[in-house]
Amino acid sequence: MPIMEISVVPLGTKTPSVSRYVADALKVLKREKNIKYQLTAMGTIIEADSLDELLDVAKKMHEATFAGGAQRVVTTIKIDERRDKKLSIEGKIKSVKGKISGI
Image (cartoon, rainbow, N blue to C red; front, side, top):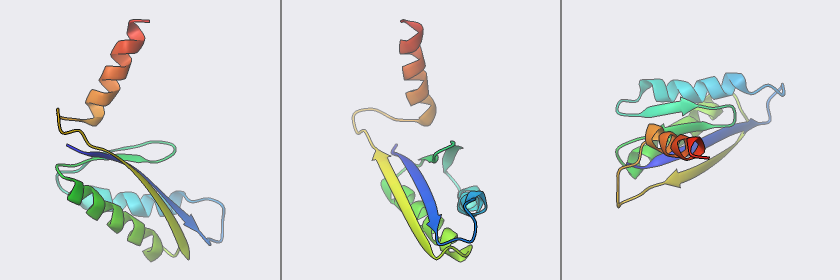
């Protein structure tokens, strides 16, 4: 199961605040089925069954920001996909926390 971190940054807006545009992008995720996501202060982590699903939702989020009125949008994505075992957002966090507790 691939995991993607996405950050959608609108440019050319009338205000330095971008939370309205981020909310527009997150509304896309609320409408998607079979998508898990976690909003963070610097981006959003998304989990889906396939890479195609992740790339499709990234495009929709990018376009939603334009639809919200941004004149320019910079979208950055990182993809983590393993084929030797199943990945999940929770599993990755649990793995790190388990190692911290052993320190």
